[in-house]
Image (cartoon, rainbow, N blue to C red; front, side):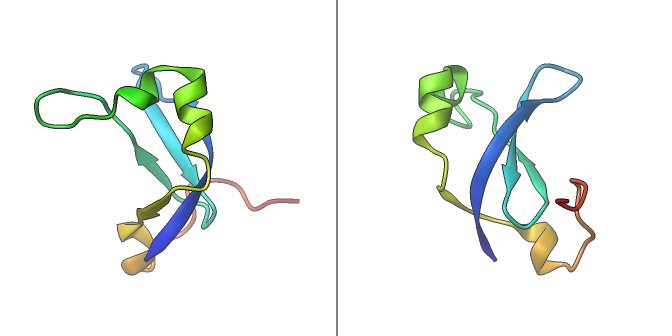
Length: 71
């Protein structure tokens, strides 16, 4: 299921994680040559991708939210 990016945070290892509208999270690593995501390395690059749709496999599997429910 496609879900938009609504925010980001760093995990405990310093990797960027996208927060999706569905409440799930997905790592966004820039690890050439396997994964090319240079935009994740800068604040401007991350901001430019807010709203980008990502495939959420956790939604597809019916998993519970990673993020707390919004108040």
